[in-house]
Image (cartoon, rainbow, N blue to C red; front, side, top):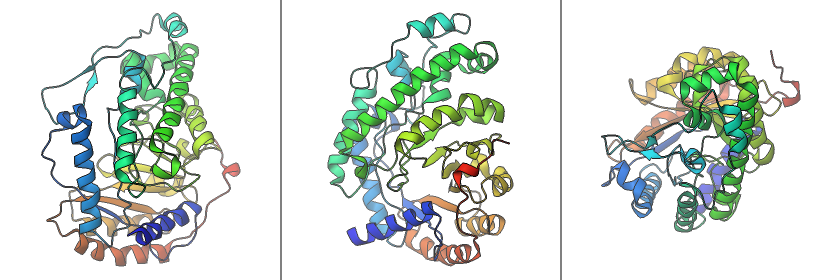
Length: 376
């Protein structure tokens, strides 16, 4: 199994390097129904670990031909950085929902004064971050150097600002309080980077992590940096260039320009890769980003590839063939497909492989020099 793990890792190393592949990677993973609700797993790290371990081992067992690198995800919520700044979690009626933020703690009118007084939290002491670091350490120990772990779903940047301010106030602050917002984003990103460093230490080093964010898709050495920017689905490329890209670049400069997540849609698709430090990959939800694929075919050409998470609607095989026909020879889309153990995951892998081989044969491989990227 360790030899097979190394083969899979080498496939992704070559993909990130832009080398010609014999076939495109296909990530089929197996999800086992958990006996615990999302809330139970959130509040009990041992239950969360048990569910994560079951899924990782089921993927190895039921999908041996997959290119998936099974991993585990310690999770204390996508608002964990906001919790460190003092925001309170609340639970909705459904036990299968993650927690949200109860009240905003910053206001548009007083933002300059509030940000000036706002201390930068300590990830080892504040909010849900210490529990998150404890889970990273526990999950990594359970993985025994074979199953990597993601770091926390910390989001960073404008996502955390939206938690602290509220979405409407964040959108207004781009225009009414840009100086104060930049000061806030600086403090958020300082905490984010410190949380990543603490997470890497808790995991026992970068060799044991998938990425610096929540994503449980494995990124190669030198490409571990990953950021999330779901809020960018709702603003312009110019706003992205000023308020998102520079802060993403701070993570990419330290940990490698590996990837960016936005579920979609993607009005800022070209801006994602317009910065000299821009991501080599995007991970997107097909449910919200499928309509953007024609735009990505142009904006990502020779610049980045896509991990696209299958969301149903048509058979995975027909879906993948349609994507291959649409995106070759310009942009590789690596499908990420989650199925149950009774859904014949190994047969699905075998059905997808000929399409992946044809996809690779039709591709124009190689990446442009990042220094040549324009901001237009």
